[in-house]
Length: 217
Image (cartoon, rainbow, N blue to C red; front, side, top):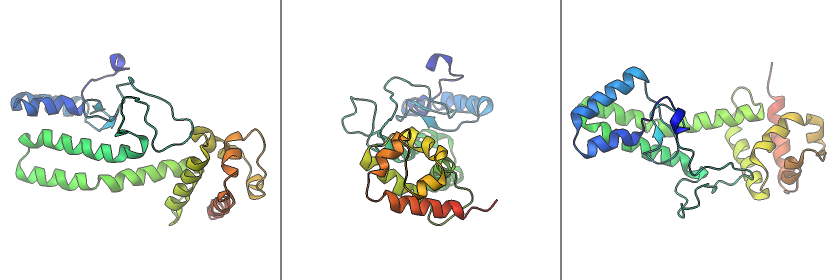
């Protein structure tokens, strides 16, 4: 994937120039990246693989999460689970702070203040988008005060029953409301079958159906 990426620029591309005091080169590279790409940040979780273009460019230690597990990390050498899926929001914040440190030599005091203020908004923006993505998976339109709790409740049930992450949402989109309401889970919905074994599943279904009924078209 790295070979076909439209750019190889990572946060680390800027960090190394700041580290060695190559400020003129840092300024030239930053101007080029802004002019050509307008950077965002995403990708694999260490700063040398966090893309400045919001693309994933390192598929070395990767894996697909089947059973939902917030401690899942595909890199078997990462004993401390620093980059586990449940910690990726914090790692994102850590890497953005590293990016700000790399840019500091080019910023005047006012720009540093603005950059720091913007960075403080990251947690709210991240979890707002996180909630939006899960609401889309669950077919939840509009806003409701209990949406985040509903999502967290489902993820808790998925973790405890080791239900398949992808198929749980797919099967929730295919099962009928009457089947859910009656807790009659057809055999082909095997991921939901796993979750339904948890004693709190009926309580989640009740909250979910109530939320769906609140949606007006």
